[in-house]
Length: 369
Image 1: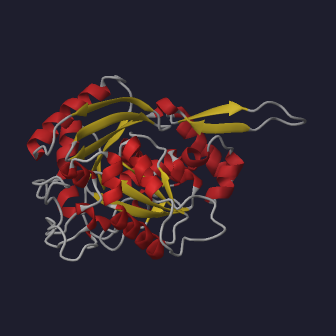
Image 2: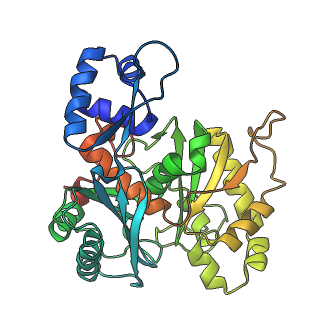
Image 3: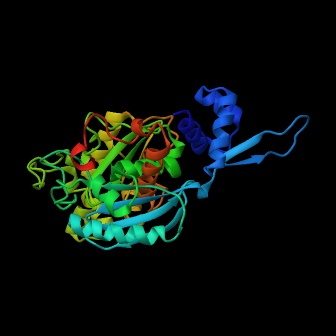
């Protein structure tokens, strides 16, 4: 346990020193030094002497060795399958995609097997820590999980973690795509600038998640943030979940494709639903900002943020704001993959793994056992 918390401290705060780590994690410098020696011998970290600045020996700074290990992040969506090889420092070494719309589980895992082999070949013989799979939620909700065009229909009774471990030959981890993307944005994108933000995931469907000091607020069963199924239009369009007028029937890439309009005309038409969604999020969670990300194309993201310049009143309409109420994610198109890969790294190396982006209680047990 001590070995893992020391490595986590270096991952999160490096370059750093033994003394700073000891203060942060509550261990003695002697204990930290012993652990550091082990981690360095195993190639997880690198140590470098600082330049002398006066009397005495200069301190040794510690940082993660990017080549100390690799993880594979995978995103399965109704639009296709993406995967990336990510090093221990969070750099994408290579990525690959298969345009497999609404793939069946057998089709999907056959493709994943080939994609993992392709990515592993980029670093032959390197230490592979694990594979993280992100896919649309919610999980374990009979009326909503793996139902309809915005989810992976037909994947509900699949032991996903077992299948992923089998085709990858690696420790396997499962997460919702919105939580994985929020994790990636928190680590490598604009989310790092905020202690409290709401990540709005625009994909085939619509979801989101509140992040407080790096911790996703998951709810009792791990499904908090499925705002796409909030009814916003009385007697509106029927939704596969069984309700009518759900938000993602109007605000999602699936809705955008069904309308067949250009970005500006579509955004103008769904402006009331967009405003209702944003102000509801603000009044419920009081975030510093809402970060718009997911699979949204840049042009569409620009139109959506422009439509949110003059939002209705909410608790977020403050004079002392330091950021706009809606901003575009900066983690880039690989954010979901980075978050999925980080999930695998954390699962293997970090003691905080179970407290961050993994669900609580026994949720996901049917698909992630």
